Image (cartoon, rainbow, N blue to C red; front, side, top):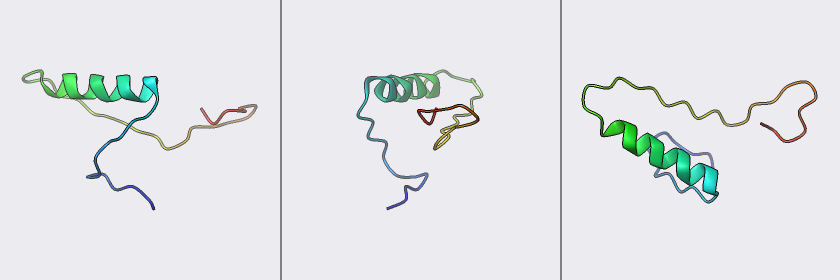
Length: 51
């Protein structure tokens, strides 16, 4: 099923877990304005892995 923005993150790779930890750490910094982008798949000419 498609995910929604308010779904709980459940990363399963080391990189995904690290990215989530960084997001959580940024949210703790007072007065820091931040934007988190989570592109589903990024691809282009010659790409063989999806990112």
